[in-house]
Length: 149
Image (cartoon, rainbow, N blue to C red; front, side):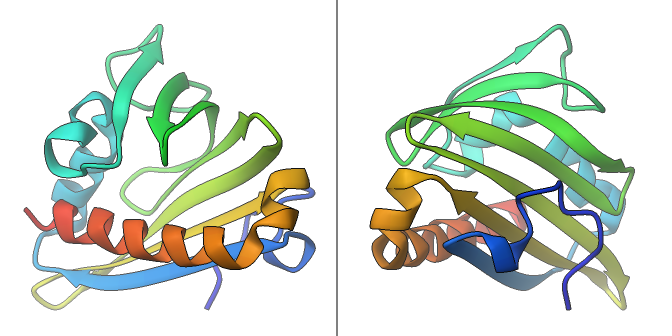
């Protein structure tokens, strides 16, 4: 199931790269949310996040801009989907690509069902779609594992 609210042009059907990972995390949605919005702490539990810098805010929030390095690429992002404890999403741009990454949290007995999805479009995602999709699926699973602590 895909949650509503993809930005125009970033819908999965319109992008050459779309990944979706899902996991049960034995933490309440509030605890998962707090880990996600504290982006500058991501590198401490997600090894693919590097040099995370937020502009004008200590944590992620609506409209907050941030930069980070992921998959060895420097990405500029802005938070554009925000439903506290339920949906966090950002649109990002890097050389040769743009995309949308989002997290959907659903309360479940004993914890939270967490879904992370990403779409990418542009020349590089078009040319490297199979390899990029495999890499994102692997790294997003590690991100989900890291959220659980």
